[in-house]
Structure formats: C-alpha cells, structure tokens
Image 1: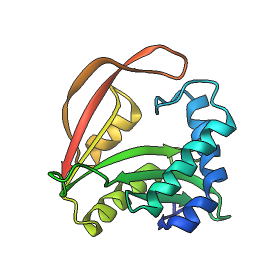
Image 2: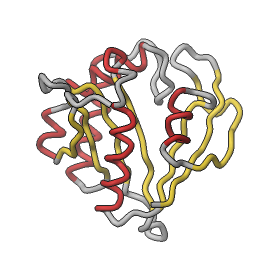
Image 3: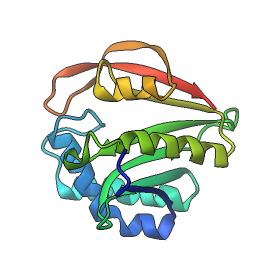
Image 4: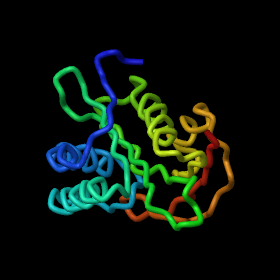
Length: 175
C-alpha cells in the first residue's frame, strides 16, 4: 500500500470541481484497454459530460463518489457507489467505475478504494453490494481478494474499447 495516496469521499460541489481530473483518469483507463462502458477514442468532451452527470448524481444523493489523490493532490483513482435503486432494494448498492490511472497502478490504490467503498456503503446503510468486471481481469482477482463472491459469467456481455467482445463476471458482497 502507498501512504502518499489518500482516499476520500467528495460532496457535490467538489465532485463538480473534479470533473476535469476524473475525465483524465477515465480517458487513460479507456486508452489502456479497460472495458468501462466507453469505446476508443474517448473524447474529452464525452468523458467530461459523463463526470458532470456523476457530479449531478452526487448532488441528488443518488451516488457516492470516492477519489484517490497522490501527495500532490492529483486524482489518480476513483470508485462510485450507486444508491439510486428501486424501492424494494433499499439495502443494496452497485459499485461502479473503479478506475486507477495507469501511472498509479500496482500501488494498492484499487484495494484502498474498495475498502473505502465498503465503508461508504455501511455509512449509507447498504449491506449488499453488486458489481461486474471483465472475466479473468486483474480487477476480478482484486475483488476476490477483497471478499467478493463470484456469481457467474455472461459470455460476450460487453465490448472492450477496441470493439472486441468480452465476457463479464458478476460479483456480490455482504457487509
């Protein structure tokens, strides 16, 4: 783990102020081949529009946004907890867009983000978390190490940023 990186929850105003930095992380991850809902090339405008929407969701209390910052205060990672779910699922949340900039990988940042999202879920009164990721990916192994239970795989569920089909594994975690 890296002690020069801090992970914290950001509120609506700060989320809006982080849009450009978060767009940089997203664009880097997509360029690096991460299957996170976007195709290459991901334009800055599209990435910023996505994060503006996320910031709006934070303002509406529909999601929790966590960021990881390096010692210089630069955003190097992020994860979200989506809490806007149907009324029969008040105990559940989805974990989304766990991203770490390629220059900051292999330093324990993703592990710290996942621990922080668990804590945020507890603070929000959520006891069942769900996420999905590319089957066999580094993220898949991270989630298993963090206590997530594999539900199963859906072949050809999504596309990689280059258009190649990829399988997706679904996970859940009880807190």
